[in-house]
Length: 292
Ligand code: HEM
Image (cartoon, rainbow, N blue to C red):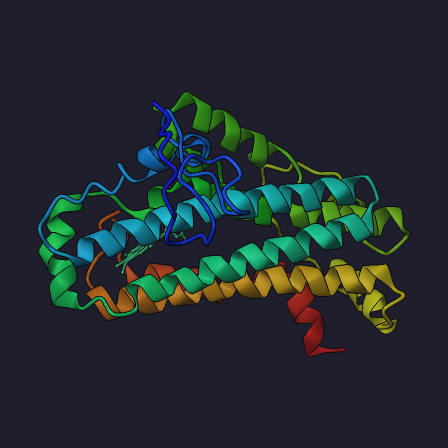
């Protein structure tokens, strides 16, 4: 029932609580759950932080992981939009999407702050509760790695019981990555990208090439804002740098909370992760800096 009593709302001078003409303030009366709860799915969202122990740090661990999973999907959308723009020769469009992706990546990277104060003793108190669960099994993250060009069919295997996930990962495995799309564009623009980098078996991991480095070096010869390919290269590098920062922050969080112990996902932990931190994203955009 809608309330008919005209009461002064303390938050809105001149307002009342029936939602009609509330002195410029927001609507206060709803017969069912608020449209906000409906639209955002707040009840569902807030029902998902299922801790398994009484250790308070466990909720920070779950929430930070969930926040990052959400942001992985946003980054994926934006990288895919940038890749598609490149495939249609829309360089300004691609740059705009890469810039938006960077904004999402900045928030993603800032999320590590949620775990910054977790001690090893706190972590030890809930670690047995999650068993073999590991971020390594995150299919959202795997999609991002595939989009960057780090391809491996074996990385789909952990998800084989989830048909929809396999379909999505296979789609990304079999298509050009964001970087492949950039190289294809350079090829179409007559830069010396080898033909086998413009059309190839996209399921194979990306192999760096000196010719591709030469192509990007040519792009960097004109570093004026009028050169859209130069702006594209720098926008890709902004993305790459943020990926490395995420990996590095993860490594530091791991070192701080569990040292050199083996990971719950079966790896040797820190050493395995460190190799990934060292791997350059969009490698020739970094290596050209050794000689330019
Ligand atoms: C302090 C908290 C954390 C610890 C101690 C930790 C530990 C680890 C370890 C040891 C690995 C290596 C694989 C394994 O054997 O398990 C790993 C991988 C991974 N973790 Fe975490 N992690 C933490 C937080 C997070 C968070 C919040 C996320 C966000 C989703 C995350 C995502 C990942 C991903 C995506 C991988 C795979 C990386 C790759 O394939 O290169 N981790 N983690």
